[in-house]
Length: 158
Image 1: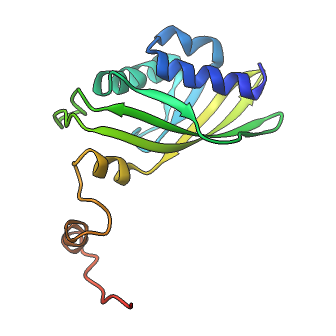
Image 2 (image 1 turned 60 degrees about the vertical axis):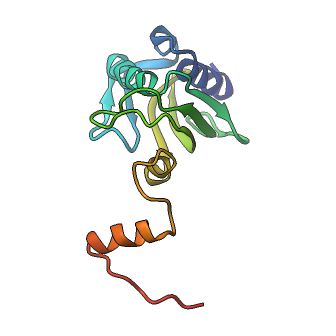
């Protein structure tokens, strides 16, 4: 498959809630990472298990292209957004029932017409803020959180 076809199928697999949709587009030893995977996932089974956790937490999740993809014979970078309402638990965190829109860049290695190594980059803090799990950026809550974490308060230079 060409890079655009692969990424279209990748986005459709995440949006379509069909575990079988990943298998025809990834290598057998696919390597997947994103900010919520503590260690890289290996193989389609681990990738599908990760997708199921997303589908359980965001039953209406969808992935949409947001810009031009960059590709050559071996790599593709694709901007997208992940949208959905948090209607299920996120691990130990109960559902917030809030809508969330997270911009993501998918950077993938293409091997033999399939996705072999995939890394998704997105702002976890922004997502947690939208869900009400962490304080919004730039407010008193964020400054208090940084103070607790040991970053201190700095004088503003206006």
